[in-house]
Image 1 (cartoon, helix red, strand yellow):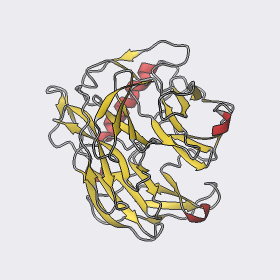
Image 2 (cartoon, helix red, strand yellow):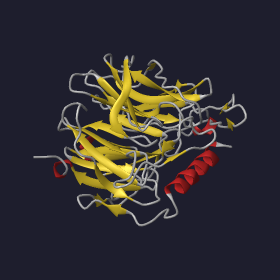
Image 3 (spheres, one colour):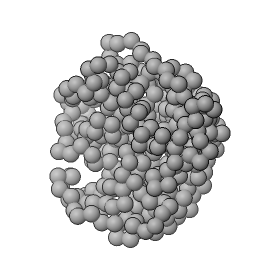
Length: 366
């Protein structure tokens, strides 16, 4: 089964698990408003308040908050390997403090994926490598295209630049073809060269088992925090004291979560914001589903509600989660938070694509 077929089969599994009311009417929290577009991520702010969004091998810019976009401009149109893709959750981009654009992406052009049900492991030639490319002139030219992960990465969830200038991007790979493990890519020179952090292995066995699709943010004391997707009813967390090279403190967090990734960001206010799919929908119990080859442990696949919470004390405590979007039977998963202006958040999801705008002040205590 190729990757697209695998994704289609998994989506069918999720819909069946969520019930017969699939794709019902979408509800949006009244404090949120729909933006005039559904798909805008990955997006980054350029000089003069302009926006840039990536669409596979090309990008566009906007001068009016995404209402209109420029014609497409090429990022890379040469031979493979290392071709950017429009696949959901395959690309992350940021603008460094020096003005460089750094794009990290999965190479779908050479992707191979097959789960051997008899051996209960991935086929030997399964691969989905991660590459990076950068621009020093806001997209006019792109340089230093290179592979930064040789393995299998299922999704990219966010990328940050730390206060000391390190670029840190969470990735994943398959360990012994049996489960996913988390690693980080780190660059100290605006994406010109890269190093890889240590492996975070949480155990498990299956094509959707292990610890993977992590999101990262920097805390006020300089430490980095990873929140890692698991099938264990909650995110696991890991901390780094050296800007993402090594993760020495690893354990379960207190944040309940279904088997879905979240997106964690530090806002201009200093608060942390987290968008994710909780363990169960509001007012409902936990529903776990098992599938042969998927994971050792039956897990919740609740994706019909997208929740939002804030922390003002470096993730020690969180505000009460608020459901900002609900679609019974739907899949509001793979969220991305973009702080368009201080206190103004754009939150998008890749599955059942929506894009919302909200004010931080409307959700936190004065």
